[in-house]
Image (cartoon, rainbow, N blue to C red; front, side, top):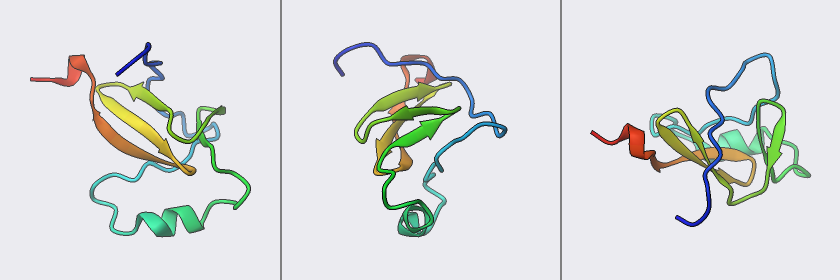
Length: 80
């Protein structure tokens, strides 16, 4: 990956956050349907990120996919 990944820490439930579609979530499309149509960005603790942006949250990489965060791997510190 190019560039420096922004480490965001954990989501604060008191702030605006987009949903994370973990592998156990059966219907990612249902998460997307619950979002406003005019909001293709992802939010993480009140900060907006454009579609395609990858960030680090602890040991997990998250990629913004049209308003929903999807797991995109693990960080270097998350490798065994």
